[in-house]
Length: 466
Ligand SMILES: Cc1cc2nc3c(=O)[nH]c(=O)nc-3n(C[C@H](O)[C@H](O)[C@H](O)COP(=O)(O)OP(=O)(O)OC[C@H]3O[C@@H](n4cnc5c(N)ncnc54)[C@H](O)[C@@H]3O)c2cc1C
Image 1: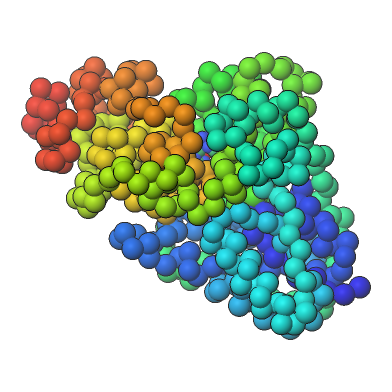
Image 2: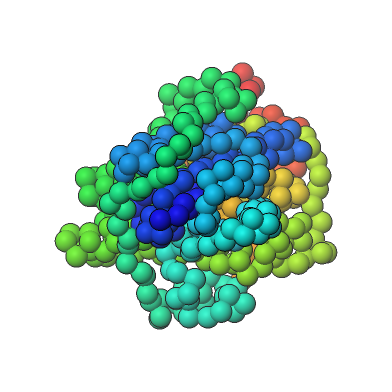
């Protein structure tokens, strides 16, 4: 049997990993993950492209993967550098016949694929890609990529009418590797240029990366705590651990596959209860798929200023001071500031929170929308390229939202989703003495966003302002 280089990407798991299973069946496997140094550099906006929350989660996920691979008789070689260069070196050193990996669809990721392909070609080494990241396999879509419906509901209905989810694949029984795999350690945060980091006590999630952790959370959410049966009612909440699945960081790095989640939902439906909530988790997984296929369809347009819509007329303000106030949670609108403080403190915010602050950024502050997307990219523990940039396009009104005038009014939203200002007060304890009705009624006025830290005096007594 020849050697195969297995390149781990956003598929950091041994279960339901078609590419890995294929590699083990074809030869002796050299499993490698390369931390791309380019993704740890500056964003050009005053912060690094990858922030500490995601970096920590990635390192934990790699450590767990390494252990799991060891238990299967192999190991994980972890490198820091330029993936196409590092992978090429290893491929040549081990005289591999082939490189196998999961396919990605967005610009930077496919650039790496092409660069590696070019290098491997000079040595006559093949590269095979497998489709791994979506619930619905790309080949099972009832349309060609060019015809992916732009509107989510159309996409969903067509997919549901031709419903097919492929079976989950087992963990390989054993992974045989060639002798002489380099012994590497998973780097520390320090190695990646971060300071020591202790998660904040106020963080109610305390995410830890890794495949086993993902399976634990899935089990807890669905079976132990029985939260799936009420998910549709709780999913729009903002405070706590259990109102939603909190699987996104795991799904984003591929510590768990959407199919594994799906088949657990199906099992739960068969054994406990089938209702709107059980359906809704699958519905949300379809949103994830949708943005993935939209990214594949529109390619680079998702990252351009004019967005998927190619809107060249819309203008955006480049006000760095407002950008800073938004990032730091100092806009003067409590519900917005509470979400932004949570993001800065924990790296995770609810879906409702994301919609609110992205809408505020693009519709109230009118700022250059992609700055906000870049900040999310850096800060979110669950950053995933298609979901993040697709959702930002959508909310900025230059994406695939069929409603042109969608606006999340902070007052209406706070009244509906934080009527007692519990969430606001949790993240902004300096406002704890102020009546909830005052806190949720502060509108995004021009004087607030220009003066920065001044809330209307009628709502917040002078000595309570920060
Ligand atoms: C501006 C903006 C940026 C976002 N950026 C990201 C991102 O970088 N990574 C990311 O995973 N999600 C992103 N989302 C989607 C969504 O907010 C998160 O997936 C969700 O809040 C994660 O929490 P959960 O796992 O508890 O979600 P649950 O409510 O339990 O949903 C289950 C799963 O469905 C998927 N999902 C749910 N809602 C969406 C959605 N709107 N779009 C795509 N997938 C969805 C996620 O994989 C999620 O884990 C973004 C949303 C907005 C509005």
